[in-house]
Length: 172
Ligand SMILES: [Zn+2]
Image (cartoon, rainbow, N blue to C red; front, top):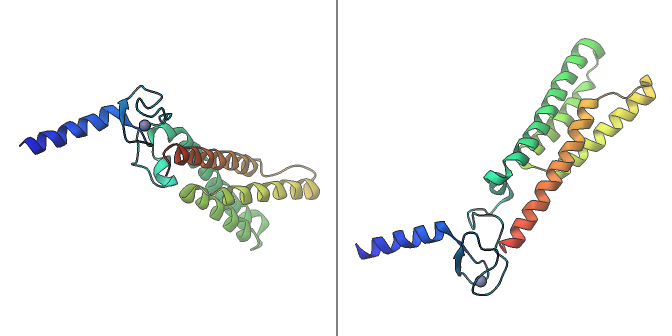
């Protein structure tokens, strides 16, 4: 009985307070520095529950970034679908499939892996696509893809930067 109440007490203690990553001291939730050793306490409330970038993205404070990444991917999927329609009904040559595979693949990489590499490739591809449109038709084409590419780069780099900061703050 005594053991159980002690476990409960410890549980409530760790929930209401922040633990110092440096020395393990429990400090008040609002505190910015450890009362024992003076180490700056993390600005993120949930310690140790996160060990991967994917879990980090699931934190409530990252919900906006998560939404951004999802919207970037959705725009990729829309672009891929539009390319299919254009390829089948207008261009009528099988080369459009290459475009579809690139856009869809990079979109999936951004959606599922939050991949910076995929975002950069998508952005470069969108720029090449726009330049080719300018050369061939005299006007820039693929605005949607350009927007998706640029925003994907911004979102994935932002996530990476915040994840690195989080890892640093929690000495992961
Ligand atoms: Zn400390």
